[in-house]
Image (cartoon, rainbow, N blue to C red; front, side, top):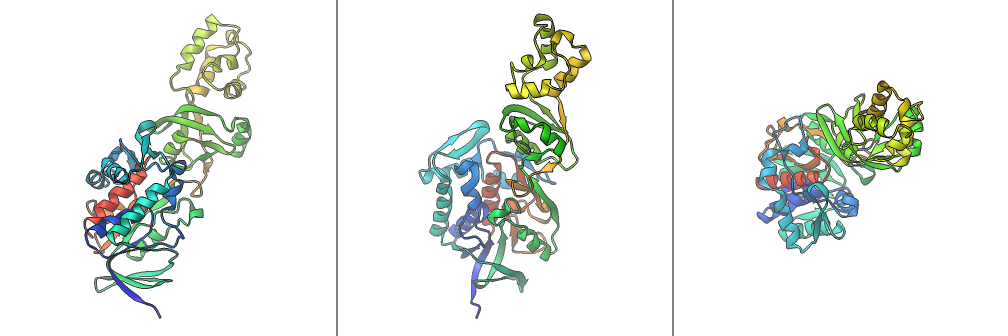
Length: 394
């Protein structure tokens, strides 16, 4: 026999956004139930930042996000900023440090953030039920009904915080989109974001010897560019700069890679041709690139000395460094994607409360929404901020 339990709000998803929303709404005296099919809470939090959780970014702003509506996320981000979360972290005496570009990490393990959120839920009275399969979700007479493997539950409001399909081995799926479609909402087609890119087989073979080499590079796609580390892999390209640009990249698109963004290679080549005419192209490039990479790039040139190179040959070599044009064959997909681009169409939601405009009491927060942050703590800040906006109206 199914047991029917009534709550003020049911939250589906015990990740960053769901736990935060449960804790904050519980503080307001609401009877909250958080459901998740996983065995443990906050798995993405645990693995983030190399196990130290890049929990926010001090420079986080609207410009650090991608959405079909570039203004949607402004309200939530303004209502709960990075310092608000830092204050919470410090109240638990969790030590943290800043890395590059405003990224904040725990000094110790990411479990501290998970345990903090779990403690906040406990303090506020929010209940968490794990290993709970959800069979169906519906609404009748202004009450939401959720049928699960642990019984049936009902509530005045329902919050969908179950993320997107990135990293399916952790149990991630498109379940939140299915719920949205059940209620007739539009979903922007989800695709992998913050994900390594892969080469065609021919290019993969040619670049195979470069696996493991890392350089600071400027990656450009259309009008968007990022200058951070690039890493050659046995399948293609990774590293922060590639992960960042992948959120803008679509299959068939070309990207331009500047392997030496601080060097005007053509100008330096022309100068070196006169000052060191006997120098080899690889010897010249090795002054500012790893030797293996310098040799690889130079191998496309038939010349042994700079003195023998014509101006067109110098331009070709320089462009191979400063403007390498690459058309990736694809990405590593959701299995390696840190987040999902796309999701619940923001035109369906209130930017102030995250509530659905056409279904009263239905909310969507976190990654499941069509708001995708840049690498470096921005997606967690969106989780905290969207959860806070939602919790205020539950």
